[in-house]
Amino acid sequence: MSTAGPPQGAPVNEAATSSGGSVFVAVVRREIALAMRQKGDVLTPLFFFVIVASLFPLGVGPEVQLLARMAPGVLWVGALLAAMLSLQRLFAADHADGSLEQMAISGTPLTLIVCAKVLAHFLLSGLPLVLIAPVLGIQFGLDARALGILTLTLLVGTPTLSLIGGIGAALTLGVRGGGVLLSLLTLPLYIPVLIFGAGAVEADAAGLGVSAHFSLMGALLLLTGLFAPFATTIALRISLE
Amino acid sequence: MKTLEATLLKCIRGERLLFDALGFRLQGGQMLYLRGANGAGKTSLLRLLCGLAQPESGQILWNGKPVGEQTELFRQDLFYLGHHNALQEALTVDENLAFYATLAGMAPNAAATAHALERMGLRGCQRRLVRHLSQGQKRRVALSRLMLNQASLWILDEPFVALDTASLDLLAGVIGQHLQRGGMAVLTSHQQVDIPGAQVQTLELGA
Image (tube, rainbow over all chains, first blue to last red; front, side):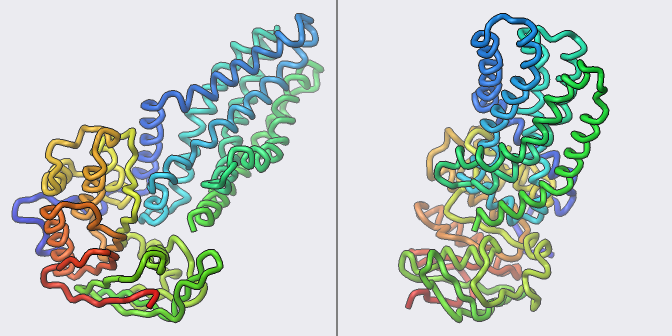
């Protein structure tokens, strides 16, 4: 290809040795590195989740029965709201400094990059929620079994939140008042996840079994996993125009 | 030989017609110099060529075929630098450049990166956070990517802005070498810069 390149002896980047897989990994690592260096971005939604979940027992009073019944719903809604807060970050910084444009016209398919970003978002924003939820659940007097089921629903549900949220984040990119608009767009889409996730604990307590809830959540995850990245990519291209 | 051709391009931006029936043909070794007043549509045309925006009508052909039919192939051969430096402030220079190398399908090469940075007058800056660089230094890091990519088509929006004479000459030399190797370039600039040995076509917008 190139003959008269840099002066003799100057090294040139070797051509085409990285594949889609290495780009995927590079994007995830970049997101994690950025989050580690700007910890506030990641910790703020988490603290928000903790505070919201802790305010309810204080506000509602110490009726153990009531708290235990409320807990799944409250923790799930807290998780949704925390997800909303963290979704702003998904594309905004890259859009602001021009990196997103570069990703959009690179030789790598944008959908692959979107998948990597969504995965990183789950690891940085969803997984911490899953890990903290059992601790918060103790304030509500949930027993170990209920805590376990709740945590599992969050584990299966938060990836779906990241996937769906990506679409909203892409659509509201660079729009003034985007934060509110993002919530309006995305929260309604979260409702099925909320209902099945929060409902699982109660169903178990009522002896109805949780397999239906988990099957449905699994199906939602699969469905969004298949379609959301494409929808997000299209939304990004529209926003970049 | 690779060719870039635009036919009957029409661009409307915010209800304003920027240009209509615009066309040009560029082949390997040639450079297209876009001129025009501010707001004439130079950046819009560059973004159309990159595929970031779609024209109202008209076609862009890469090697004779519409870009829409070969997006990945076209993008792999394209390098674009706009007004943004596209550098993440919280990452180091090295991390930014390595990321872009990977994105372009290349394995990051520390020696090549060091060499490119040195040529841009940024010796030893690899480990520095972009946040700690001056505006001029950030721009030069962005420009150093020119020496680290293997794309045939370079689309550059005001690459010479705020560069000192030495950097200007260096950049002109880099572009010149790229053209001599059969590459193509489309660029805008308010300054009249001489690219050594280049076959230059000029396109005036808003005339």
